[in-house]
Length: 123
Image (cartoon, rainbow, N blue to C red):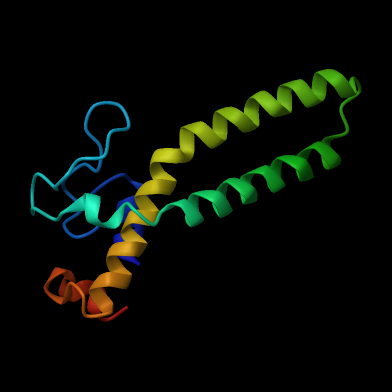
């Protein structure tokens, strides 16, 4: 899925050139290169963000069980800080992937058929 890979790189799912975000984490209204209306596909990203955050949290819990730090309180604190950093740092990429999935679903469902490039139609 080329579009999802583009979304993970915080690029436009259609062209792969335009950035999804402007200053900070503010989603652009349209792709600067191809004109895709990005805001149209950002409304249903909450489920993917929720489940990906849950998966990352599960990985942290497993790491805490497997690592068995000698000082349990310090280990929990460090692991919690690392988990928070990973979850926050990966948010733009996870949201970009969610936008790309929404775009693919809309395009393949006929809602936005001209938006799907030929390389994505075969996937």
